[in-house]
Length: 195
Image 1 (cartoon, rainbow, N blue to C red):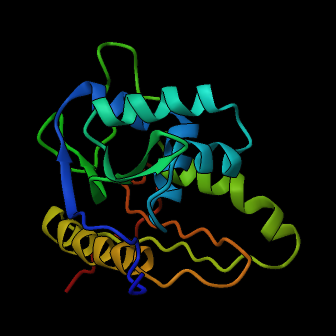
Image 2 (image 1 turned 180 degrees about the vertical axis):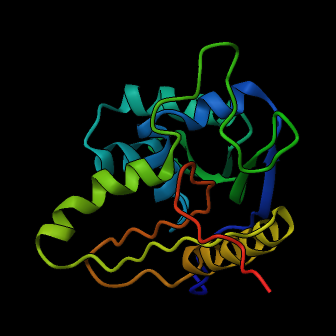
């Protein structure tokens, strides 16, 4: 292995335009599998060990992700006369665009937004123990900006996420990194200055 993360080739970004792809992302176990594959390709056996779930369950979720075009077989190896597949992501980042707006969490087939699709909500749940132990580093800021500024800032955030995704994996502790930009209804604003 040459130290690159992950240890297989993949696209930098892929725009998801199909409701099945969004549904595939909406399952917590599948997003965990996708997260693990940022580090390196893995077999169903390795993934099931990592997530402490039965191989049949993990195999089902890997199949859903593969059929949605989010995973692919990146290599195989022969184990006791059986070819074992190693799966990898098809892209470092997935952007949802069912309604023409990248990054939006769309309604999927009239069933509402997928559960656990809100990364900031997931991060809030995950970060609680770190907060209680004094190990959470975080900021929240508010600014009145226009759509162009928001888009430009989002592109810079996406580059930072990509940088985090490609950090060499070392140490024993997994760290979360959450980032987002969103409109806030009802946030106080100063009146426009008068001349």
